[in-house]
Image (tube, rainbow, N blue to C red; front, side):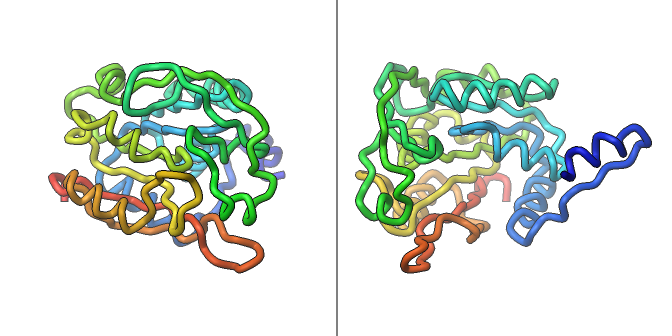
Length: 239
């Protein structure tokens, strides 16, 4: 409804924007404080994350990466409406290759890793329904296509347990990344994923410190336990 009203009001130079909640406000404050002008949106699905940043007023360049063909088609259609948003149909990982990805019934829980029972119990609609062969590239392989000296770059990673592999493939590039936002599990939901305490230690060794946790994440409807959160890490060279 807001979108239809905005379409009418824009003719008069007026727009209605949602007032961000506490988590989104803090994210926006960090983005503005560290003068982020470019975003790598890794595991973009249909563009929900980048779209929400645009609604919050982020005006920088966005490069979104989504390996699955169906969500990518929706992502690409959305990005085409924005001159500063580009979409790419491949995954990011720790090598340049092709690989089968498990396709979840809800698409956004799709992962290269086997899903654990804890995830399937909390979200039965997330169970795998098939596989798709996709291309994988390292961040280090493609980084210079997007990064220019002086950029203040943020990397968002939402890859369903595959975050460590993405970071391993960015070992040479992380020095030029100011902020990292990634979705992290509190308990194991995928085989071999790094859960929250381990991810904090892993990124600490990469000289990134935890600066924010967004708690409006994945909650088990049976136990009401919080299962996943979004965390923001700051490159200590920029603190």
